[in-house]
Length: 150
Image (cartoon, rainbow, N blue to C red):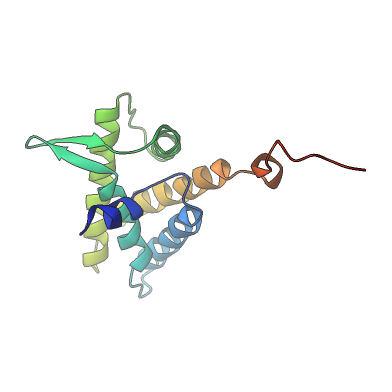
């Protein structure tokens, strides 16, 4: 995969489709939990974005490629969905890789562990909520140099 393609498919708080993708992934996981057939396409796409948000350094270590806003959004989703505390960028990158791996494993398994599926669904819900919270309102997005005329 080219570097541009990897960058384009990286988890980013500025991605306007992230909230929808995370919500769709949560729905797909919920359908799998309920025993309904689900292809888990959005789950796979979200896993790919998480994978591309880190890079390998050494044998087991990962480094985050996330910008500060994405780090904040992602860490908020982790904190809300798990009891695990992430305190460093290295821990954040490792957690992103772990979640990406778990999401990929969920796609391939029709009889995946229900607790793991529930944990991933909860993460996706909180990621979607965190992404929505990061979206700028129309007033915030307005150029401050615009002059108002009456």
